[in-house]
Length: 340
Image (cartoon, rainbow, N blue to C red; front, side, top):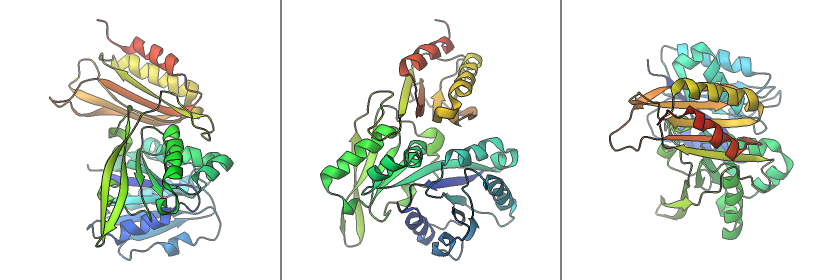
């Protein structure tokens, strides 16, 4: 059974999440989306700001999806996936103060939701002009960046080149494996954002690839690809609230039983500080990739597609969180390697 793809839109207050959501709903892409908008206050207005008559907009007010209305999220999503008319996808716009991790966890631990829907991507909209201010004053801003697979560095038209490079470096320090997209008014090709399965499949532990808006001519948007140099493992930025990343590359196949025990012990001991974990693993004796993803204490792991003949069979793991010891992780995972 094909699962409904779910895209989570996160980002600090005023970054441009609703602007991006409206772009998705206005686009002539032929897809029908259900939209879940979460507001922290009792009186919600974001739903009235969302356009798209052909799409269903559901407001969950008076609490963040990451805490008191999480049960409402399960009920709403369960209702949507039972609908006979169906949807091509579900978009969830988080409150600007919310941690997206519990929402991702919801799609991992609820049996019905897990069988019928899957998180494809977590997109964080970042305000290039005020991101450093947000990082200085709120840990949520750093957590939102750390959870994302794609980061839209928005409002770049309001920032000069040097300042833009500086804030991108800060963002990259917090999450060096996310794709960084520079944009104004969230104007980016939607094909690069939706239905990409970036949550589990896009692993770039050695360098990130950014797409930079270069100019506009005759209503067309032109882009160029930019490689962003990788930071050392377990690097933390100036305003990262101690959040760093560890990337592991293992050439020898891993024993499945030992690896799963190692992973379970890791999330048990460090789950509260482990914001994101994902990897593509070469399991000894299997011709299929083994893919895992996790947020805090929740981990989803299963075999994926077969390895292609032109692929390098290796294991790549990425962890983002607080207090991660790269040397300790690198040494301990060696016990999962098969004997020579």
